[in-house]
Image (tube, rainbow, N blue to C red):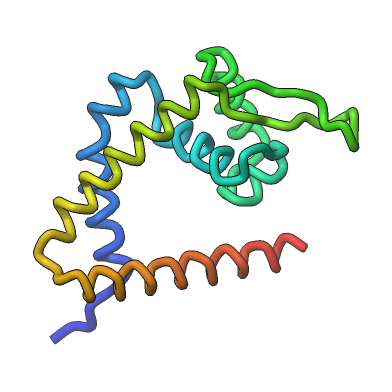
Amino acid sequence: MALESFAFYVSLLRKDFTAYCFERFQELGITRGQLFVLLCIHKKEECSPKDISAFLHLDAGQLNRILAKLLETGFIYQRKNEKDRRANIVCLTEKGGNLVEESRSLFYAWDEKVLSSLEEGSRQNLMEAMKKISMDLHREMEDKNE
């Protein structure tokens, strides 16, 4: 019996999640990449493009295109950083905040669909393990960028 791969199952889950959300994202007028930028801004309340780039591992060109589209569609606004007038701070508009809340509902519905066969204790263990893995990877990436 071949060893099972965590990466394989993560890939399958990602494909299912993307398919589940694709139509709704189109209705909302947003891409998956744009949504994750909005989620990052929401998590930090306000942040610099550099913070977003580091957190999501996006290059500056890609992030600038996403931010330009989010500004154009009214999901975010920018203001000058009071501590460094050369830099911008990015914040959600009310429209952006509403979209984040709507996406959370979509995410929770997918979670319920996918995790429905697991008992509550197993769900909690899985979520704790996934959170730890994610945080460890993020910390590792931050260490490389320093």
